[in-house]
Image (cartoon, rainbow, N blue to C red):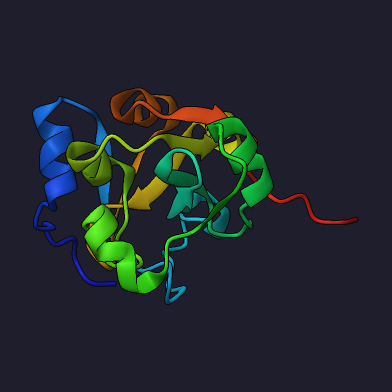
Length: 161
């Protein structure tokens, strides 16, 4: 394996450092599936940008191995319905391209409601994008939620057994 190289800090790293929030910078691309041995796919969370019929843009964060329940998210966010923001409108809405959306960067620019699936709380830690493709951070779930003003909720689609 190659020796540890110092990763250039992303804007998200810089924001968290400035706030004295403990996190690990990771170089991984969950979209390609090349994961280090010490990282399980279900520990990586995707940051989804949606639009609600009443609230406007909102963010849902859940493991990349799960599917979002738009119905549950709509209900807890005070919307009748929510839908994914079309990929062509993503960057102008959140400031990030597909695969780089992250709660820290989005919260710095926008006051969108953020909902993190409650499984993150059970896990204790979560891995989210660091705002650049191929870069992520590992952070305490509760700390992240408090920093970005997120709410924990059950937003996963339950598979029919």
